[in-house]
Amino acid sequence: MLGSLFALLAGCADLSQLLPTRERPVIHDLGPVPVAESVQSPAPGIVVQMDSSPWLNNTNVQFRLAYENQNRLNFYSTARWVGPPTEMLRERLAWMMAAHGQQLVAFSNKGMVYRLNLSLDVFEQEFSAPGKSVAKVQMRGVLIDATSRKIISQRLVSVAVNAEPSINGAVSGLAAAANGAVKETLDWLAAIPESQITAASGRR
Image (cartoon, rainbow, N blue to C red):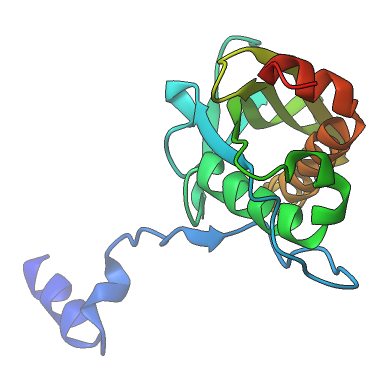
């Protein structure tokens, strides 16, 4: 018996082929930034701060089989984000603010500083049934006048897009949802009346 085993091992050019291997996770990001006609300086008065729920402070690509157990969060073993979702979203938001700074001209008052606090609560793929999933991004935004510390506006940003029921579907779907959430955030800021912004600072 042992002789046969040794003969088998000796006949193998690479003994590592007999051993189980662990697949290295593939690293993903949010993809190329959306194309803009021009890039301007970012609105100088807005300081973005972003945090997340503790379970999102990692690079896992997360999914939930809601049809089996709504309270169980899973992650794909063969995929990882290049960084925590908050870092990817903050970087994408900064680029989009630079590309579309003309929409935020109301925040460019010299000497004024505004703080945008964003809290990321959801960044996952959710399966409502086998073979049916959506990619969901949800975050809470609070815009504050940094001097008076008065709240100017608040917003719940929630985006869900249909996604293929796979790892690739999770990655592409969450990238699309993230871009949608960034756009919705910019649209919210751009729609705040200038009178509401100046009222929080006490200016007339």
